[in-house]
Image 1 (tube, one colour):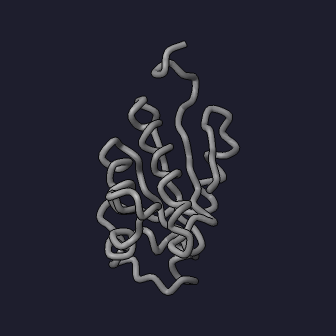
Image 2 (cartoon, one colour; image 1 turned 135 degrees about the vertical axis):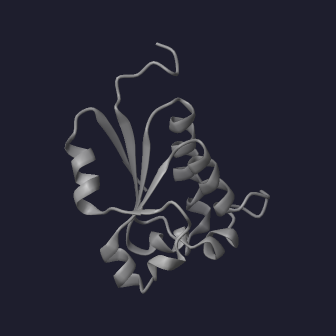
Length: 130
């Protein structure tokens, strides 16, 4: 089987414990999203809890996973989006975190527990949680 041959209908990735307080954990979910999208697999990124702050461009632009890399978390996220990953912000998390939806990066849709669970119970989809 080649890298582009697969049976998965898509990959749903939830960011739950990955947030701005631990920037060293932030690049990995976006690397996985970009890799899957580059393999022509539909990718959906779900942001919940404090991870919704990463959808605010000025927040992600100031974070780096390591002092040894020049890329910001915003760069990593943008690469995944440019390859086709779709972004979903949990409405309840936005409210709980005090994030104004108008602050979110362009193209971010609302989607939370129901949408992610629909993917998780669909045997054609793969899920990852960070």
